[in-house]
Image (cartoon, rainbow, N blue to C red):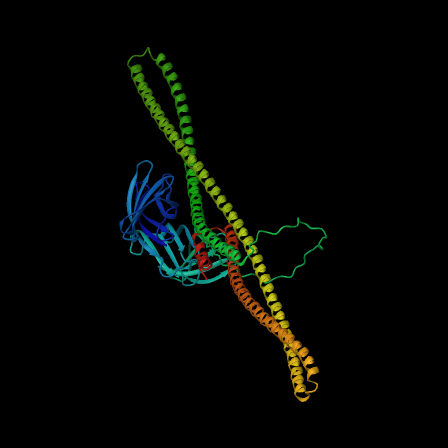
Length: 631
């Protein structure tokens, strides 16, 4: 906050009066409100020390060299062109009115905010008049809480002495001090500080009136005035942080048993979900990419709507203040017109009475002249005197007619001013309606973004279904691996049985050969039997070879099946890992979307429930960046 103070001299109405201007947001921006405080030495109606407090919106802002700016404050009666100098250390104010009157003055910065400022603190400005003995008699006073109401926060007091401690007339005061909170009782907050004396303020939080007391040298408390709340600026901020949820509460609800018939038509055909892992991952990647794009677009659109919303809100509030100033001006002009009408009526009555007197006097004089015609010298003297009286009455009548003409001209001028003021009020009403329509469009766009978020949630549910299909494929691959292992075990058992048969045949052949060597006589019979056994052995060898071939083939098939099972297992494990990764990404995306939904819900609640301010985005922006940042 920047507070400037200087002196103002304006035609015959203000003679060396203290002039205070407040920039509530330090550096001035377009459509900001600026507060002006002064008083007239004697206003146009003849009222002495009439207070003149205004709230005007900044327009026609221009940037100058050295970081300075120039802007205009236009009101119904006066225009102010303000130029900052030396990096806002002082300002030049050029004041003018519709009649061509002009004046210029320099105001120096008497106080500005320092250090870290609480963004949640509300700014309050009280203004009015004070009476402090002989030092201040019905003088202007402004008390400001620029950083809220807590211990050691600054309070800025500005007023004008009728005669200061050095004896100088109209001495200005602007001091910033740290306040000391005394306490709160029956919604009356009390605090104290010291400027030229110990000052105690009682702030009624119901009607916002500030009662100011000072401690006299004899120790007594003296009430010097009551100030009305002139302006209150409450910061508002938007945040995507979800408020802490309240603990769950047990409640009872009425439910119905499920009905045997279907409420909705059954889906009898397969939905168009991706069928393979590649298609699933492709869909998932496309969904995540689209979700990120839509999230970024939503964030950019929110930033744009956020800034536009606060600019429109500030402009509406400023226009309301401007409208109030115009309405006050209309009331003043209307009173002046009514006064002029009464003066015209009074003058017309006087003219009518004087005309009647004039006519009666003429009749009397004519009768007297007719009766005095016979007299010479004496009658001529009387006639001359009467002619002089008639001439005087005639001149007086002409003067009254001239006054009547001037009064009628003034009456017409006041009527023109009143019509112009009423036209400006109608223009402001139309501007207000346009701004309200813009606000309604912004709310409709918020509803559109809610529908987009619902569409993203539906896509997320589709991705969950695809993940379930992947889980089913993995379970099927594991079952095929188990079946392959069972077949391999059966082949191994067949090979073991073939080896046992081959061993028994070998043993029988050895017995036959021993029998041939021992019994030569039975050789022939044994040869026949041996040949038969040999044939059996050959058949057994062939069976063994076939069994070995079958075993090798079975082993190879088992190894191929095992390799295939391993490959399937690896693919299944890889698919499962990719599915887990996709599921993690989907969960992260779901969490991000839920965060966005919660933040948008919070934003919508704040827009509907609370007045809006430019500081909302300071709470939303970090959370938006956190959600949009890559994992």
